[in-house]
Image (cartoon, rainbow, N blue to C red; front, side):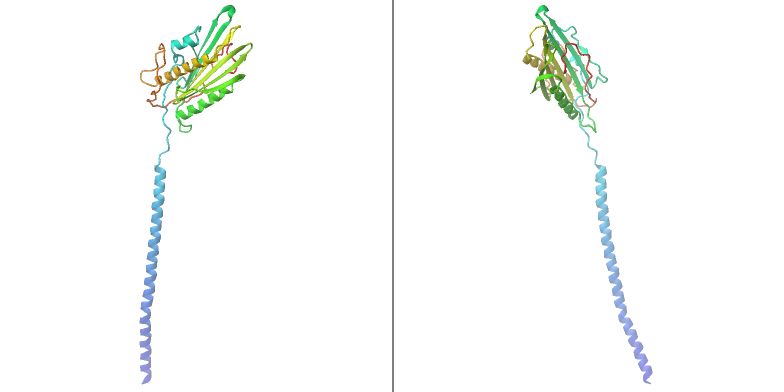
Length: 297
């Protein structure tokens, strides 16, 4: 009689224990599920943030345009032999037999060229006065890998001044900044002895925008004639350089180069309006040198 009742109580106990365990399992499962969901959301959020950040950086990097150099101001050069007025040529090379000048050879006249004049004023037994003049023009284009035309011209300007200062057999080298000629200008003066004669050399290098203008001028008293005054030669050189610089600026404006017959060079203060790019610039080839030209030129 007692055994059936005992077994019934045991079954009831097992059912109650099993029922009590179910909420525990469900609660644990729910906690596990919630934890996984939060983790997934967090991971997903981190990945989305990283993706958005990476995408933004990538987009910004690819969207940036490569830096470009500024366009060169001058697109052409005037004829070197047309850079000086008749009056200036009359003052610097008064006894020249070729007032039109001698054009030097160039493989690209749009970027470089030069013109020379020489003058021998023969005074018979009193000796002779010799003068030699050259105007050289160089233009530099802007280049993505080499820099702007003005920057390249600046480099060439510095090199030419340095070369003039280191001229062979030069004596008493003097370097003088020259204001008012282009954007920058330097005059290098020295003496060169050739046989029994002393040549007084003046080299003025000027830069205007992306062009470099170089005026070489020297004089000597030959066959016993007295040497010319260095200060006077320097003054004449500056006058010629200012004219040549004005010719370069004028050639890049509407209307072309200034009138050669003009007694005074045109003002070049405001001649920087037209912008273009072209050319590559190299040092012009030297034309044949007169026997009377001093060494070290």
